[in-house]
Image 1 (cartoon, one colour):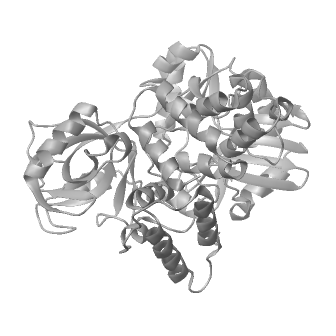
Image 2 (image 1 turned 135 degrees about the horizontal axis):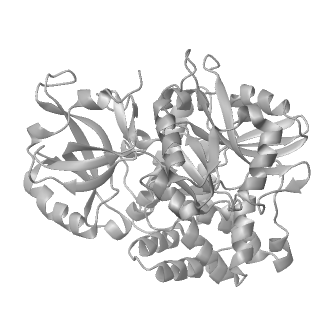
Length: 507
């Protein structure tokens, strides 16, 4: 299949809000793929190529100066081979090798194909072709029972592999996909609520547990063989020997555990998120130790527990890993849940997760059985620029560049603005149309992708916090930023300052 067909389907899916239409378009595409193309194509549609990270970032992609092809000739197989070569480039001279591979491939691609591949590599393919609607497409294209496809996807942890089995295998092969120690499964996800009391009202009797500002881990043990995976199912065992050591000492031979990890400071409190992630992603650093906290167990010594209620799984978890249990309580009392939430925040953690004691482990799904409660912060920032959208936002100014006021000139000119992040989240169709009309009237300069404007428009932004960052001159970046509203009642001088945002950094 030509890569242009995949890109066109991605644009089509992104241009409609109808889940049925998205699913139908994806099913039609899947039905035309050759068996060897299925897994790569599925990875591209959800911006998660099978090769994982290929060592190319935003600067590497946007700094290319090439002439693109006029007519599409690249195939899905060509793209897969190109990504294999990028991953293989390592050692001395690898940066130059990757740059040359990028230039060569970009020159063979049409502008539309290159835009699609760039968004895949940057994880910015906002087409609406998320796992859920793609699963619907796999069900339609394969004509297999939805329950069988969904269960195979969650237990294999691999949407591409599931698509291959569903589309090319037998019903028996699809149903045979099960929980395997050593093979990661998609993590169960949580919805959100404003308060712990609101969450308890939904779940009923619940386990109320600390929500750490750390990294999600899934740990598998088979004898002395211990493997540790990230929430995206990447194997990072070699980076976390301290976690491997903890799990090897637990009183069980075969295990699958779900939890979080973070690093602690000298006082036993959590280090900043950025410190944990720096240690978590390091291939060599061992100065900062990581400690695991487990909150669920999916398998113990030959017994699968995912279909058992949480209350039973917690009993098993206490027996096996009591010393490394996530702090929490079981309660149906909203006041008790609220108190634990306050305790978690006082201990410098993110908040709590409220989990129904009757719930099974529904891997890869976000329902009402798990509900996270975290405080949300709002700040008034200034729009510095906006990027042209893609997919259903093609022709509209979308991704906002956000700046905080620097009244004293600590990071630039006094009274200027320091960029602290970007966001496209929270923008309604009405806001997209408004800013597409309004921003060009304030343009100071532009590139092919971005319109830079005078810093006159104040926007209210909700964030979960800030983290240290070397990408922006203020040394911080916003975490999970989303638009709440434009503030016509405020002037740029009323915006929150970079110093206010930096004060949110722990320590």
